[in-house]
Image (tube, rainbow, N blue to C red; front, side, top):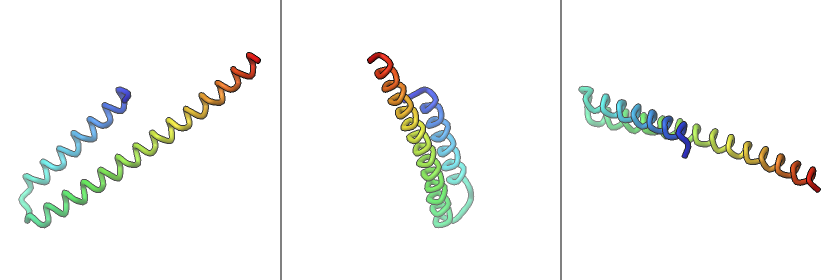
Length: 78
């Protein structure tokens, strides 16, 4: 895992913890609070999944570029 990935995951985790703490100390009914927490958790999970898919696509694209370059180098050496 790269440093950038670690930083992004750390920021997302800290933000999620902040939201959860904010919701827990808010004066609301338990059912409403649980609904808000569940909704926020789903939103965060969706955003994290989207971010991870983007990074997966970027990594796949980089791997394809490296493969093409490797083939070019191999052909030029033959």
